[in-house]
Length: 262
Image 1 (cartoon, rainbow, N blue to C red):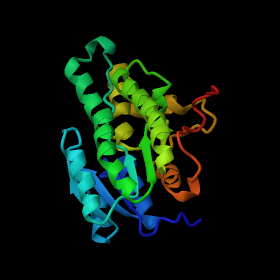
Image 2 (image 1 turned 180 degrees about the vertical axis):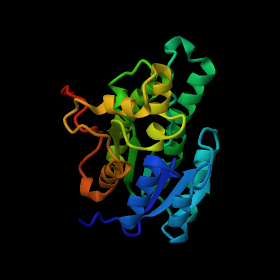
Image 3 (image 1 turned 45 degrees about the vertical axis):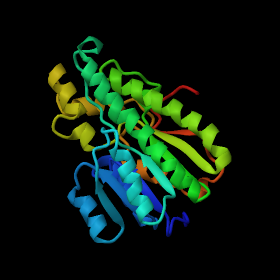
């Protein structure tokens, strides 16, 4: 299916690995040129750049001025059609809520929410120059499935979901669609890398990382983790004009983990 993304320019935050890298690759495969923002450039992202499909921009999106710098890179290339707010981090808190310091709360909020706020604020004027466009926010099922060992992460994902809905109401009449996707567990380094969620929980419980991962998805209808590519496919669809009458939506991709109607 042609997604009509040839010639489009897309900004993706947190694009060097995991879901962000998969989104950048999927957008590029669909014909868009990707302005890829992250602190470092992975080998996989460098391959996209070498192929002429992406432009890497080194940015620390936890700082106040760098999100606007990222959007400027798109403007200098000729304009902006798509923004994907993906950057964020989940730090397991095995000690629970009382162990999370103010500095840790602020760091999670700054990267998880304010990076999206600042990037979106800078992007809106550029999207309006195109007389419309699309913004997609990568959220999480933890926005509505609180986890006591991820209190700060869950709170910021709930904030992002709310922000997405509000922006869709403001920007829809101006031709800008705003949607979010809420993945369940995804098979990335965030879960399975050194110091990732599985190993952190395993260290705290005496189980193995594989045991932790299995326990997370057993009993769910599809019984497995999503892949980053599957999340990326959904994001790219929402960014395309194939989703031209979809805005203010939050789409869950979790293998059926969430069993309630909402």
